[in-house]
Image (tube, rainbow, N blue to C red):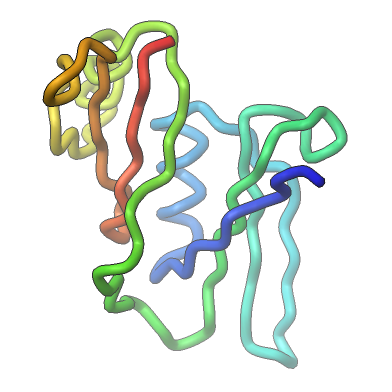
Length: 128
């Protein structure tokens, strides 16, 4: 088995594509339009798709729905980065919202940081 993707419902597909590609540096892998079913999809990721073993994020826009209640069960997506401090600097320079600056995790020495995407989803950077 292998992880294929995580699906996030988004309120503005292009805004989300721009965040994940321009701010986080992911690739837009493919899009799907389903006008009869009233939704659009965009798949983003760091690789070239599942064929290279990289998991993807599926961004789903349901026509006419511009925001969602994220609830309390969702936690975050984690991304390994070589330098969490530099990643935060890059994210802030791109105008995105760093919600937890890079630094050691409470009770440990792993360096982490958090950013929030335009729809409020949390993304953790773990320095590797």
